[in-house]
Length: 184
Image 1 (tube, helix red, strand yellow):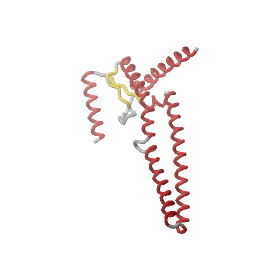
Image 2 (cartoon, helix red, strand yellow):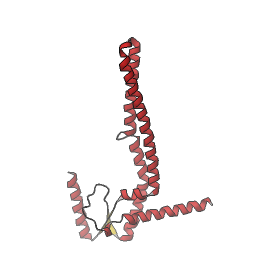
Image 3 (cartoon, one colour):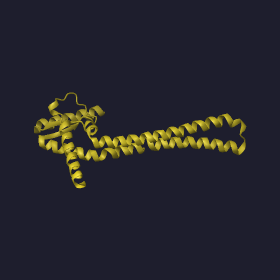
């Protein structure tokens, strides 16, 4: 079904393109993001936070394993309330590990939200740069080959990734010059 939708979309684009003689260009937004210094810095901060969370989770898991092993070995010696209390402690630690894992690393967890928030400001900048580049080059359609669009063959002259990146980096240089002038 997915391939059918892509095929239909591509056929419609071709029909529209031939009927109206539109130029088509292709960009790779993932490549653009990976070449933006600001994105790399933000991604490094995110990865640092992820490492911290993974370390915390490993510590929690180790504590759970240690307490569970201790409980299993001492279980025969415990009676009544002591047994229930120690068992509850182990069960609560297990629940805490699972909850923390889900909240931070799950599909809708904190990391997924942080990654989305990391990319959003750059998407707006990339969109504006693509719009500027497409107007300068007379493109009617711009495809993003990093978003599940199969580009089987692409001549280099139709890949506008570097032109979009140039526009973005020029904008960054202007902002940095303005910032450094205002600090003086």
